[in-house]
Length: 396
Image 1: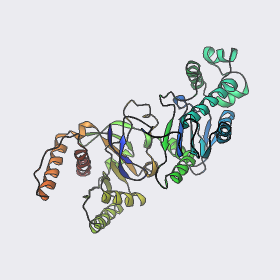
Image 2: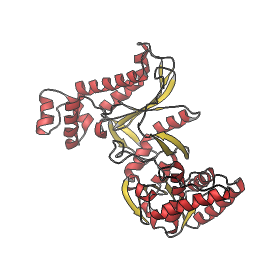
Image 3: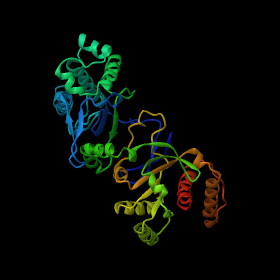
Image 4: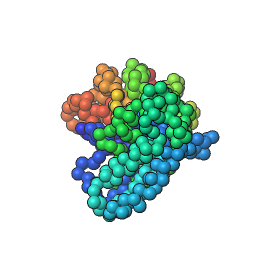
């Protein structure tokens, strides 16, 4: 099932497959490639350490003994698998309190898929935890029975003071036998294809402590709201909801056929209004809209962006830990952005459907074509509806 979603790193619409979170059909996972892997701990328990630092710029992860071992094992991954005939290179890595990132390059075709390497690393980490930090016998009985910490400084060093969380995690581990998040695919991956993507991904991995610091210090700005009611319409939202109360608003909509001069003139007026305190509503679909949205964002002006898709589905395992990517994350952390994704109720609202029909009819007549109604599920309808919703909100 394919749909359109916003690529938040590039600010462009792109096709995405919503039936899977990762894995590329037909891809040779033994061949040369560069991958970014993310391995979350079960229930995101902070098994490897804690976030430290007095500011976002100085944020770092203070690894506990187990976290330091995981970091060392990850750094030696290429050397370990070299003896098995695997030509690999770990380009960057980051052990966070509750998950691990690493970017790895396959230099030569592998004896087995890269998945075998990831599963081997995960199994090795679980083995170390079980043998050195989880304990067994009387120590394990105290964890599961009396709710106290396992004896020994190793376990105390890993788990810290979160006794209730420790007991909960220990019970999960005892039942599953793995420290990692239960997932049919075993891990989250991203294959790097485009020029410049490697540098962006390495920067993203290294930037994780700063981003986590910002998110934990501004939880309200990164909380996913499923039932946000605005001007009679329903949305899923994330960001600064106070922007909805801003009295001065403008909607930015540009046709795909707009000339460079038209885009420049609209940018001039939009920038002037934003400078005077106006909040901009936009779907950022056409190139002109994207150009204007980018210019406003770079100047730090507040915006409300309409998304056709992008938020995780309600009840999905990714819902709890979702955060916007790239430039949207930065704008959210500064309180300059609100993301709104219309629900089906909003797309099917009678006033929105009427506005979409009128717009499509006008465009057809301008091209001397006969207007033919299209279903509300059509991609073209959704794109036009997003702009109509933006205008509706800006004038409500």
